Image (cartoon, rainbow, N blue to C red; front, side, top):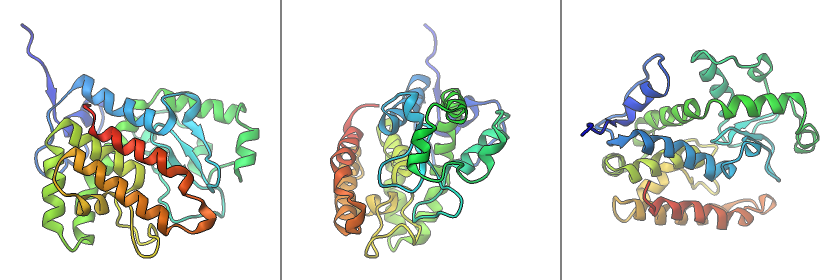
Length: 261
């Protein structure tokens, strides 16, 4: 009988590409099979893009930025900034460091100035090139997201009034495949929760806030806390953003955290 190969989360970072090492997550990582690790990327892609190649280049109604890749990484046009952390330029740099041929025009600001300009050019050569690039680098995009999780715990502990509780819940979740997926997906979905700009009425909606609000260190409790945090965000959001339209979908995504990986 062939021995079943297991990889830690940090080991996955070396398996996805034969490249430079990245820092390990504090503490022990979960034991994940190769297929489970593939499903992490596939489920993020499904959550953000419906699992479609077409969804790899998107610009949501009411937003001031393009959303690209399996993680809907944010890319702002020239002269525009918002409260949310820009993540596509770091991804482009990360892919280039891994030896991927990335178009030169991806290293500057988003070339489309508005959603309407983006949609008009949807079948243009640049978006077709982006979809091809992003469709071929799903593993590396997953690695990029996991690397963000690696950096999250020290930031969250520094920002929390309950650092030991946050670390305990983080490490407990990290100890199971389903718990690890909660952390990986949510930090990409709504961030660490440490940026002062990512607040409505002084209240954040990131991973830190979810961990602090959990009733137990389980994926089900994580899902319930995430739904409560996102409901609070919508209540606090400026009326012009009309965030209520997204809440049902956000809650459905959180309910998925209760499923087996």
